[in-house]
Structures are given as structure tokens and as C-alpha cells.
Amino acid sequence: MLARIAATAYLTPLREGGSLPGVMEADDLGTYVVKFSAAGQGTKALVAEIVVGELARRLDLAVPRLALIDVDAEIGRREPDEEVQELVAASAGLNLAVDFLPGAIGFDRSFEVERDLASRIVWLDALVANVDRSARNTNLLVWHRVLHVIDHGACLRFHHSWGRPEQFSRAAYRYDDHVLVPRGRPRDVHDELAARVTPALLDEVTALVPDVWLEPDPLRPDPNAPATPELARAAYRDYLLARLAAADAWLPEDSA
Ligand SMILES: Nc1ncnc2c1ncn2[C@@H]1O[C@H](COP(=O)(O)OP(=O)(O)OP(=O)(O)O)[C@@H](O)[C@H]1O
Ligand SMILES: [Mg+2]
Image (cartoon, rainbow, N blue to C red):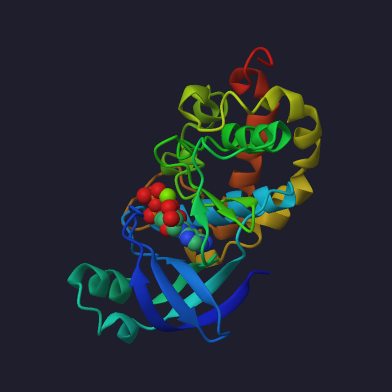
């Protein structure tokens, strides 16, 4: 289970993030980057953060610890910025907390990265269709010399239109946009990693997502959306298994 904590203070907005995440303090005395449930990308972004972040962790990539955080509507009230006030008030209740890595530096191409690690990150991003690891916006942090993957809210795009799983599971991946290409060679790690992504592992990961974020979204009705959280968890698992089975459609042809 993900830890459940409560926010005690709003420290500062992270303006570089498109979803306006906030740095908050919690009742476990930790400091967290909070991804808000009412941000433009909706709660599906939070589902993707958990499913992909926890999958990455189980494939031995470094991911900041995730927790579920209760936010009281009052807590943003003293913020001078109205946009922040509104976002925090609208997000009252459950939100996603990402352990804040103090002093972490955004990765860019001037950093060294081992080929094997790059291959693993590129492989995972191709599996989950992550379009958010470009040279301009790497969503990779270097902290204590370890490369950490963050920001998986835009992955698993199939859940924005549930009726076309086949089309998404067979979709090609645009390697040219990835900051770690050509250092990463996903074909080199495919057999090992694909064997580790078992139905049981996917069930373990989707079980971490709270039910409220898996209920059909009344603001974005979709006749093909799973009717219950349990069906939604199975749909994420089956989608990822189908994508693995269709690896020929998205793995690059050679290892160059
Ligand atoms: N755990 C963390 N520790 C330290 N800094 C972080 C952490 N998470 C995010 N940041 C910083 O905040 C920025 C925004 O975070 P993130 O990319 O997760 O948000 P976002 O709103 O989803 O962004 P995007 O605009 O890329 O979609 C990151 O680029 C990074 O600089
Ligand atoms: Mg980002």
C-alpha cells in the first residue's frame, strides 16, 4: 500500500510544471511535490503516475517515493496567487504526493548515463507510451548522482478513449523525441524486462491506485469506460499485457 499522509502546509508552487504541482509539508514531517486531483489533466494523470511510477520502481529504476495525501480546502487559503488558491480548494480530499528530492538537478544531455540504464528507461517509456521525456522537458532528475524518473501523468493515453485498446497497444513509439535516444537500446533489455512484467506484478501495481480515481469520471463521460474500479484495474493490466504481446509494433527494428 502507498502511505497515507495529511498535508500541513503549502510551501510553494512549482511553476515549471504544467499542472502547477505544489511543494507541501505533511504530518509525517516530510516534504512532497503534490500533484493535485483538480489539475487540468484530471485524476487519470494521477492513476498514470502511480501505475507507471510503481512499475518503474519494480523494474529497479529510481523513482521518488509516492504517497496518498489528504489536503484540506483551507490550506491554500493564505496563498497570494488565486490560481493556486482555486486549485488547492478544488482538490480538497485525496491527492498524490511525490517525495521532494532537495537539490535535485534536471537531467540534460551533458550528463553521463550508462547505456544499460538508458535502455531500461527508454524501454519502459515505449511500453507505456511516454511522450514526456524529451530533450526540452526530460522529466529526469539527478539526485545524489542517481538518475530518477518523474512525471508519468501523460503516459497510458489509452485511458482517455477506452474504446480503442487495440489501436493504442499496437501504436508505434516516437523514439526520436526521447532524450536518451540513441544512448538507450530498448531491444537489448526487452527479453529481460518483458519477462518481469507479469500479470501478478501488474495486479500489484494497479492495486495501489485508490478506488476514487478509477470510478468513471462524470465530467468526461465515456461509454466504454470500465464501470467499476476492479474492472478498471483489470483493464490497465490487460492493456499493458496486450502492449507487451505487440512488442513488434513498437520496438525498434534493430539495436542501433
Ligand atoms: N520529487 C521531486 N523532487 C524535486 N523536484 C521535483 C520533484 N518532482 C518534480 N520536481 C520539479 O518540478 C517540476 C515539475 O514537476 P512535474 O514534471 O512532475 O510536473 P508536471 O506539472 O507534470 O510537469 P509537465 O509540465 O512536465 O507536465 C519538475 O520538472 C522538477 O523540476
Ligand atoms: Mg514535468
